[in-house]
Length: 110
Length: 113
Image (cartoon, rainbow over all chains, first blue to last red; front, side, top):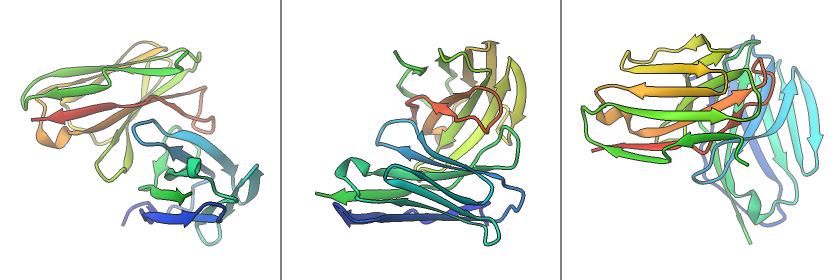
């Protein structure tokens, strides 16, 4: 069993829909949770960063962390075709090492 | 002005050859990383250096050897390339600890014939 599980999709939604992404994990020591966006043939770029449990909102993006359930989510409101990308969750205990999910490929149809 | 740059972008070579990938960051960061991303997009840490000191060395074959001549550069040398080494290799950097955002380069696509 992988340390971080993420459904690879693909996920296809119409423009304007809410995109819901999630990851589960097994390591209860994880404290730092991140979401990265990766466009085709590009490197991942950080979207959201959360410490411990709770919600964080940034524009159209909302990240949620539920440590009791070992479950994190990313919601994208009013999705745009430019949101079409692979979304990777990542998490860490308290050191230099990030553990990534496999990534979910999202397509937003115009 | 590219923050994390890798060269080359593409590398096509024969099995058994030795090759190097170079990475440079101009962000003034202290920590640099090498990741491998396989065909299923799974991104896995290989090595990390902090101020030229190796701090993460995951279970990677000895054929892979990182070198950090200074804190702005982290190179990856691969000996005796094998078919299974075909992947995209990403370099990344962060200010200090992982809680700081990691900035990634655009990857080096390595194909072994």
